[in-house]
Length: 237
Length: 117
Ligand code: SF4
Ligand code: SF4
Ligand code: FES
Image 1: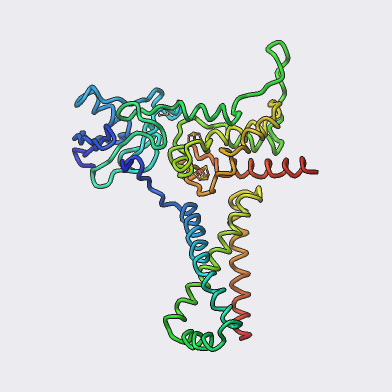
Image 2: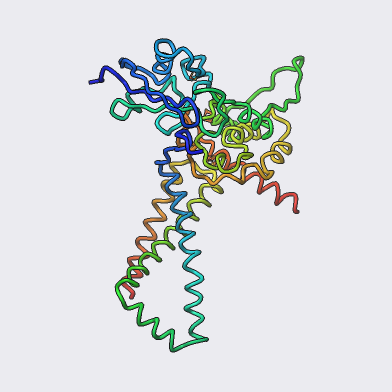
C-alpha cells in the first residue's frame, strides 16, 4: 500500500538540500512530484520538461544517484521507504536547482561530427534507403536517441576528463558513419579518433545500463574503435 | 565537489567487470616486481631463496597463492572479455554463448589438469 506522504529531498545548490512532503498517488512519476513541489510548495523551484511522454529528452535528473528520464520514472519504482533524493544531472554545469546547462553536451555532438553531411538538395529525389542492409540495421539501432544526456551523466570517463566527447555524441557519429546518405565518413572518423574521442572509453557500460531508450552507446563506441583502427591500418599501407 | 549529484550508483554487471579487471591489474602490477625480485635471488642469493621457499609452505602464503591465481584468472578473463566486447561485432546473446563456452572449456581443462598432477 502506498503511504500518504513522500519525503522528497531536492538539491538546490552545491551543498543545499530541501525536503518537501508530497502527497502520494498511484502511477505518480518523479516529474509529477517535482511539478507538485513547484506548484504547491515553492514556486521558485526551477526544473525543465516539455513532452511528459519520453520524447523530448529535457527532463533528465539524478534520482537516488541514478540518472533517469523523470517523466517516465514511477516514484514507486525508485523510492526507498517513502524517500527520494532528486538532483540536477551529473557532469553538466548547474544553472539553477534542477536545471543544467546542456551546451557542453550539444557542443560535443558537433565536435564529434554528429551532424548530417548530405549530398543532395531539396530539388533532388529522396535517396532510397534499403532497410535490410547490415549497415542500415546498425544505424537504426542508435537513431532513437532523444538527447536526454542520461548516458552522459552516467559516464565516469566524462567526469574524469571534461573534454571527452561522451557516449551520445559518439553514438550519433556511429549511426551517421553507417548511414548511406552521409557522405563524410573520413571527417567523422577523424573527429572521433582525436584525443577526446572514442578511444577514451573504458567500456564500463554505465551509458548502456542507464539509457532510458535501451540504446547501446557502449557497443556503438566499440564500433568506432574498430573502424578508426581499421582506417589507421589502411592509411599505413 | 562532494555533492549528491556526483555520487552515482554503479551497481551493474558491466561496471563490476570493469572495476574487477582494473583492480586485478593493479594487484598484479604490485606483485610482479616482488615476484621477479624473489626469482632473481636464485642467482644472487641462493641460500636466502631456500629460506624463502620454506616460507611458501606456510598456510598464509598458500592462501596468498590462491589469491594470486585468482587475480591472474580474473585479469585474463577481463582482458578476453574486453577484446571480445570491442573487436567482435556480435550480438549480446552470441557473446553470452561464447563466454559460457569459454568458461565451460576452461572448467573441463582445469579438471583434466588437476587429474594429471
Ligand atoms: S562505456 Fe564508455 S561512454 Fe559508456 S559510460 Fe563507459 S566510458 Fe562512458
Ligand atoms: S543514448 Fe540514450 S541516454 Fe544517451 S542521450 Fe540518447 S536516449 Fe539519452
Ligand atoms: S519531459 Fe520529454 S522526455 Fe521527459
